[in-house]
Image (cartoon, rainbow over all chains, first blue to last red; front, side, top):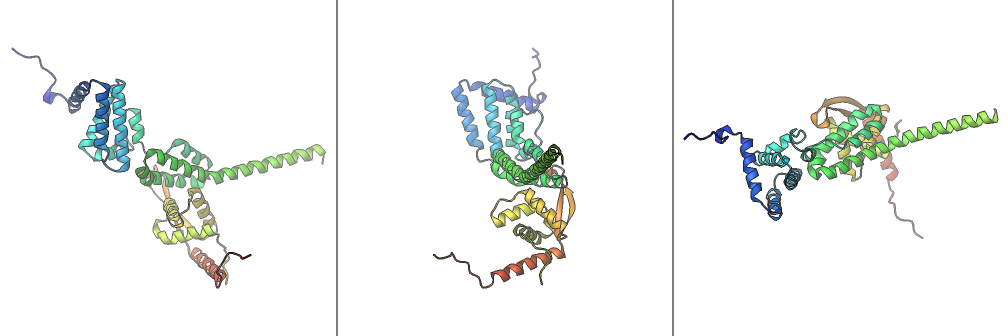
Length: 198
Length: 110
């Protein structure tokens, strides 16, 4: 008796096979307690992986994945797939840092981003003199990406960038403020002269 | 035999960093080097303001460098100390050495 063809073996893509296996694994974790135990186990297994920044990203990926499982979000499979890719190819994470795949959920994508805080960059663009702007912002972005982010992780690196932006923009802001004060004083004086009819 | 240009402390430090970094003197490298050696926080804005001032005085020159991906496609600006800058730096050192000669500051008594 001929059996109905099923999508197994070579016909299934690697991703589909992984999804099926992962779904089965997650289904076996019937209680919340078991799920949390597996979550902690995965965190521990990956805790010493790669450098400090890479380990932090992987931990964030694991957390996002398990949170998605708990809320019943299907995106968790995509996140576990990313983790699987990282486990298989250690250079995979390095490749997607800065350019995360578009199918990844926003939370994971934001962990993988290497852009400095946009508002701080805007502040610099607004306040630095035009001839310095491009080079000074480029220098800060380079230092942020090459030295600060890999060493301190995203949160502290963002703080660092904000500190640099404010300390660089403050003198420029002071100069703008002094110009405004001078102009105000000039207008006041002109108004005073007009009133007394000199 | 004094120089026409009097350098402030930060200007001297920046020129001294340009001498040290030679061909690789651009904003980020200068800022990091200054922070490492002086152990104090230096903003990139202060570095560029000083370099602009030194360029106006004719002590340093700058040229645009390459744009790289890490910098978001923004170009570097390389700085070089000129002969006048070296002279001003040496003169400042000589003036300071003269001022310090035979002097040992101690807290005032009484």
